[in-house]
Image (cartoon, rainbow, N blue to C red; front, side, top):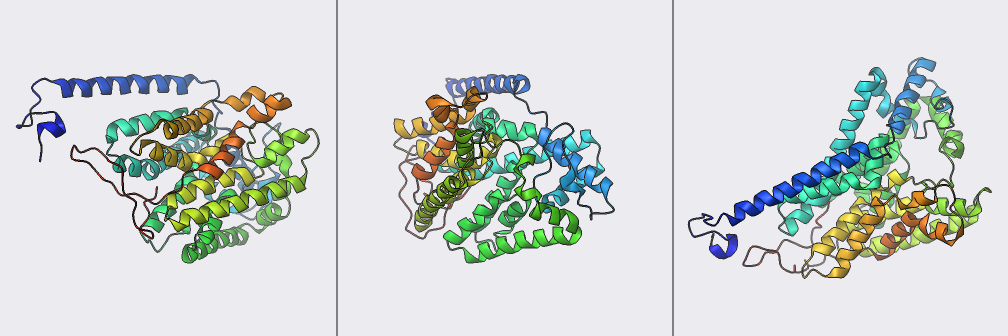
Length: 430
């Protein structure tokens, strides 16, 4: 029933003062100004990456198909960017996925890459933001406009798009699986399996399925990952042999592990020991500790039915234990940002959750680690030059884990403090 207490209008649904319409116009004007400002910044920011990674994918598969007959050449991992040591670093199945781009000219391939990344970002936005918008009764137009502007300013997202990276696509696959799990979809696990076959880092999500006792989905994911790898072995035996016996272990084709953009535990050790190689024992001990903390917290999330929190914790752990976590790989922290935002909006709203959510967001927008690009020595370099690593660790250890909540509204139509669902209730996921 519509009444003046709920809408601010008269019983006839009219707005005689025009206040509501004026407020809406002001809000849209402010949103328009914000969008224009963000667009201008993104168009002129000096940190655009010139689609470097997309060019590597594109040029590597062209080199590969031109160097051998059909798909049977090992030349894929012989490729180097002219004048540099960088080459194709992903498994052969990833090359098969990129192969259609080799049939296109560079402008068409670039357009396809941009469209794919923006499509993945739209799906990620839908999976992560929609439950929050719905649960808290937020205005969709305003919410999605603000979130898009915030994502455009987030360094990992901006870098992923401007590099032409694949991580947004992989995150979209993982979140699609999360949705299938929440709805009882029989095909859950396929997205995670494909992501793990394209790049090794998402394989930790198979571990997440195991720890959370989703045996069928874990089996599906493992079978898909192994099947895709065997398909690549059958179609490209030379490239597969070169990758698994040589290229996978050749860190020179990835870049300098001590480079400031490597925001992983390995990156911390590499900067501390530079110019010497980082100690493998220290790296292994750190990985064991991270995996132990991750398994403990993911199991806690499982116990209360928090699928979304489990995914967020797994994304943070993946960034920590990967030998190389460039800044653009930190898109795996987007689920954690969604969890923090949801917590900050939960009534009664308190300053601390909002401060934490905004603090993490500002850090990931700040480009702060680049202040130590040329010298990460000293205490300031250890703290500031590894700021994203400490953020990942803090998220892994302190991210809120709680039961999923239904939407509740008060008499005025606004949300109120939600009551927790009984244990074992279906999880609301991204």
